[in-house]
Image 1 (cartoon, helix red, strand yellow):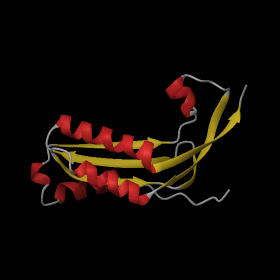
Image 2 (image 1 turned 135 degrees about the vertical axis):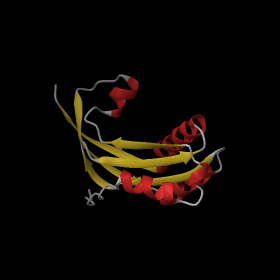
Image 3 (image 1 turned 60 degrees about the horizontal axis):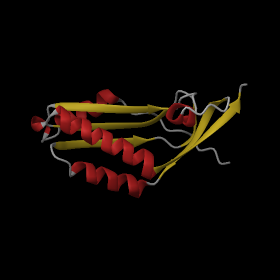
Amino acid sequence: MTRINKKISPSMDEWLKEAKSDRIASQEGMYLVHNGVVRQTPKMKVRNSLDDGSIVIGMDFSFDKDKVDTAIAKTYEMEGIFHVKVWLNEGYLEVGDDIMYVLIGGDIRPHVIDALQFLVETIKTKCVVEIEQKVTVL
């Protein structure tokens, strides 16, 4: 298994400063940030209530850049969305490490919430590979 060094997480203060200085920022009334983090509880336990007695100690994470770029482009097509920024980590991540950051800026709350939900769901289901590394703790 190849271990790629994880990336340094971006500054949300810098991302917001950049978004608010954009020429179209005067049309934006809301920004939402999603920060996905490696958790100790396995995905199958959280999502399906299936407990195999294991905990996550890390994750191998990769993504398809072209698919992410397509998802970002589709998000920009959504009503009221003017700013989209995505950062994805890669390689072997430990519990507590950042997996992703997504920033959405738009005109009103419902549009921004819908866009964030759409983009994060698309990234998680169509653009990334997450392989949990687990140990049994029975």
